[in-house]
Image (cartoon, rainbow over all chains, first blue to last red):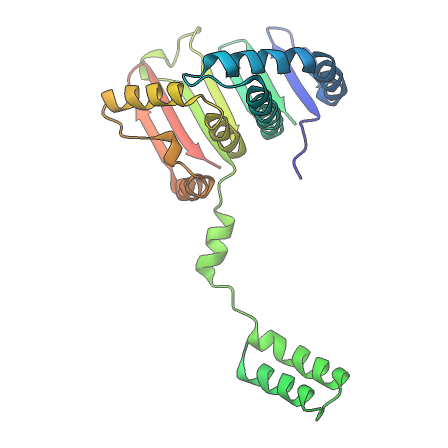
Length: 105
Length: 145
């Protein structure tokens, strides 16, 4: 089963050694869910308008709405998959006396 | 299914042996009839890459340069898979434009033909990948873990 990342570790070293910052990403998931629910009517409306007006062959509002719902559901799933797959991402940039380290756990 | 296993099942069907006896006989046969894991299969399972790593190191000209930077990125392979899924959300017109632009550059690649199985195969084939580009200014290493 796919799980979204739990933590992000950010470490910035300059001349002084500072402790790393642990960001709890798991707290963002409920917030994102609430935001998605609140904004879903607007998202749906935008998708329907774009679907109906953007096609060469004009669609009826009902067909547009069905396409819109399917498309937005696929987009949400793809975005969730993308979020889940960033587990294990590690970026490290260092120079002579500075270092930035980001890892997603 | 081996001949011996078939024979035991036939004996069970003919009620020559009980269910318990048949089970015992089958469990005795099991280790011998289990498919042997070949070293090649074991290597293939072990070698499945998980991460794509890109490292950019300063080259010989900048080895003692104080401003020279080293960049190291480790990308999970699942991110590549998810990214490919996003291409299915592209509108057909945009997809055609991308394919057209790639064809102009001499790359005959159509995203619609890329299936998840092909991608898995491609990722598995990358298990031995190691690219190293050395120039005076920088050294770029691409490998999988």
